[in-house]
Image 1: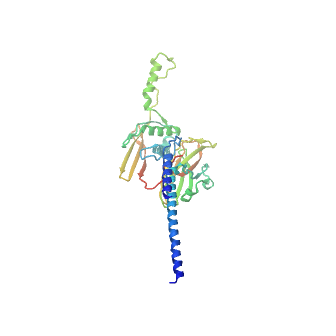
Image 2: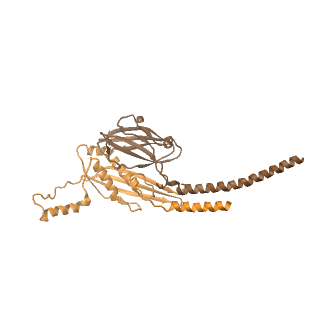
Image 3: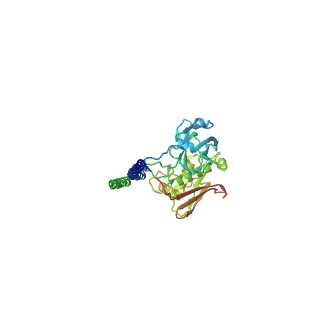
Length: 171
Length: 200
C-alpha cells in the first residue's frame, strides 16, 4: 500500500464519519418532524369535514334512460362503485324504483343511499323525510336497491349513493 | 441542540393536544343521515325499519286489492319489545302509521286517544256549555277493520374485541273480522362494533 493510497483511505473514512454524524442529526430532526406531524394529524386532522359526495342520478322520469341522468361527484367512489341500471314502474299506484348497484372493489364498502321524490311539476314530496339507508356492499357484489314513492303523486325521482363517514368528525 | 428540539417538540405537542381536545361545539346535523355512534338501537334503525315495513306493505298484492276501491281502517296495537334494551316501540309504530296514512291508502283509528275523545264527547253532552243540537253524537265512530301488530327481538353477542347485535322486526296485518293474517313481513338489521388498532 502506498502512502497516497493510505491517505486517501483515511480521508475517505473521515468523510464517512462526518457523514454519519450529519446523518445522525438529520435522523433526529426528521424523527422530530415525523413525530410532530403525526401528532398534529392524529390530534387535529379530523377537524376537516368528511367527504360526503357520492354518485347518483338527477331527477328522472319513469322510463327515462338513466345513463343520461347519471351524476358522479366523487371520482374515488365511482372507481369502486358502479350504477348499472335504474328501472321504475308503477305498482299499487305508487312509483317503484329498482337500482342495480355493482361493486368494482375487492373489499367491503359501507354505503348509504337515499331517494328523493318529485311530483309532476318537479316539486319535492316529503322533503327530508326519506331517510338515508345503510348498505354493506361486499367485494364485487351486485345488489338491487328498492325505493317506493311515499304517495301516488310522485312522477319523478332521484337517487344518491355515498359512503358512511366512519370516524367521528369535528366539523 | 437535540435536547432543545426534543423540548420544543414536547412543548408543542402538549399545546396542540390541549388545543385540540378541549373544544365542544354544537352543530345541527342531518336527521336522516346514517348514524353510527354506538351499537344500540338508533335513529337509523328506526327509520330503516319504518321505511322498509311501509314499502313492503304498500307493495304487497293483498294490500293492492284491499285498497283498490276503499281506504281500509286500521289500528295499531303496541309493538312488543323483546330485545334486551329499552326501546320506545311507540315511536316505531308512530312512524309506520304516519307513513301509511300519508300514502293515502289507509285510514287509522287511534286507540291511544279514546279516553280523550270520550271526555270531549261527555263534555259536549253533559257539560252544559255546548248547544245540544250541535253536540256530536255518541256511537258514530268507525270501527277498525284491520289490526297492525308486531314484535321486535334482538340477539346480542360479544367477545373482547367485537360485539354484534341483530334485530328482527316482524309486522303483521290481521283482518279483525275473520282473524286471518292478511300480510306479514320481517326486516333484519345487523350491527357490529370492532376495535380498530389504527385510525385517525
